[in-house]
Structures are given as structure tokens and as C-alpha cells.
Amino acid sequence: MEPGILLRGTTIWFTGLPCSGKSTLARLTFEKLGGLGLPVEFLDGDDFRKHFSAGVGFSKEERSSHLRRVSTLCRLLNKHGVIVVASFISPYRENREYARGLIGDRFVEVFTDSSVEVCMKRDVKGMYKKAMAGEIKQFTGVSDPYERPEHPELLLKTDLEAPEESLVKLMNLLRDRYGIPVP
Image (cartoon, rainbow, N blue to C red; front, top):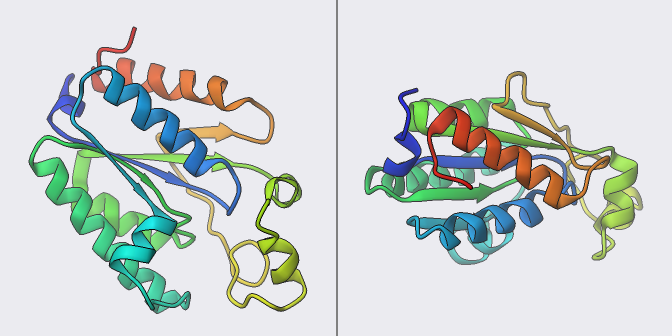
């Protein structure tokens, strides 16, 4: 990828188990890039479902349809020079590869890798507990699979490092590989 391509619009796609730190890191990334005066948008899975995919379920087919919408929006925003910080569980590799294929070399996959045990401890909504009790069906990491990325641009061990440490690693990648002017 040529230096500076990020300045013309890129999608930074955070993926990982529920409560693995995706939204926290995505929000920090959004704030950091926005603070640099760059055109940036933040798309979060929960908010996106509420406003653009209301009523869409969690079957593999429904998740795929939902993520195709997200990928298309990311591509359109990138086309207009906007950096998109996207935080979606996106449990199936094929959906992330679809996004990568659609967005092309402007797609940066960031895997927030954390053990299920740590994710369960972070779960303030009690979703894992409900899923383990059978109250939530098709819950990623419990009753539905999560297919780990094979070659993410960045793997962050969010169960072993603080969000600020992960953010520094991401900003270094964006500066070194994509030419973003991060101090």
C-alpha cells in the first residue's frame, strides 16, 4: 500500500468476541484520529443494528446480510476520503473477507484477541451468563462460533494489555504502514 493512503479513506475493522475490547479501542481510535483533524466516522455494531438493521437476527445468513450493508457503507465513506473505525464482532471469516474484497487495500483488520473467560468477567450486561443458561441463542463464543482471523493487519492481546497499550500499537501501525501522521 502506498504511504498516505489512510488520509484518502480507510476502514479500520475491529473484530473479536463480545466484550473483547473492540468498542473501547475503536472509540479511542476514533477520538485519536479525530483529534488530529482527520475526517473519521465511528460505526459500532450495537448502534448500527439499532438504526440500520433493526429486526435483523443473528443467524449466519442474517449476520452476513448485516455485514454486507456495513461493508458497503464503509466503502462509500472511504471513497469520499473518510476514515471509518468499525467495531463489529463479525464472527465469520467469509464476512470479513467480503469486506476486505469490497474495500480493497484500504481495509485494516484489527483482531481484539481475548479469552472467553476474560470476556465473561468484563461482561457488565450479563450476556455470557444468559447465553450459558440458554436464554440467548446464537451467541458468539458460546453457542455460535467465532472464526479467528488468519492474517489480521494487527493482533491485539486485549486480555493481557491495557487499552492504551493496544492503541499505541495500532497508531504505530497506522503511522508506519499507512502513513498517518501520528506523533
